[in-house]
Length: 210
Image 1: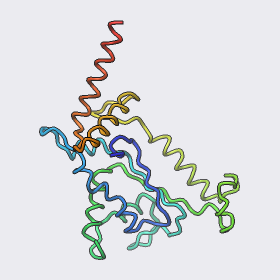
Image 2: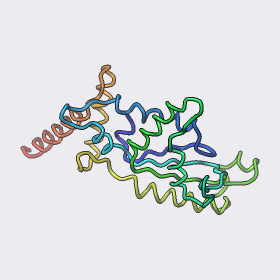
Image 3: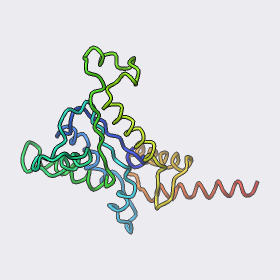
Image 4: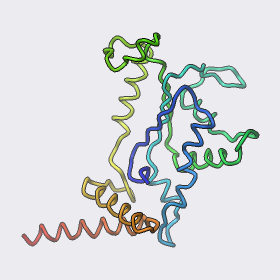
């Protein structure tokens, strides 16, 4: 349920987007079964509101980003969208297509960032943490800075019902989720939100009577 308490989800894989990378996101395919809501609430709409922004980061990317049919150059985001299209055949195609559909459904705000290998030599790769940033490949530095700026820009406070959660509110939400899961029950988003509101009211009352 980390996705439900985060505003930005970074998914880090290697080389390219493949079936294994997609299958590792199976959490998204089962997210709707991991929580409950009050009967009058549309759960799919609520999950879409609570879902974090999704960025698929691909390290050491070596493929050419071109459309398979037209041969035209495409962006990293367009590459992601092509990979999320249903596959007609292949091992576990139906299961992986279900994951694709739920990634699209629960992460409507999604993007992709591709990072080339930061160095050329294998020997340098083994000591990468000791190489100054300005000594890395120019293309890597450009894309890395774009990614850094994107994270700072899009890692915004978590919202629920259009309202921002403050620190204590987020901590209360996490506490409610953990408490419910540890008791063997399925978390209810609405009940957790009610607990946050009740805590805020009690805190405000306590301050008011001082």
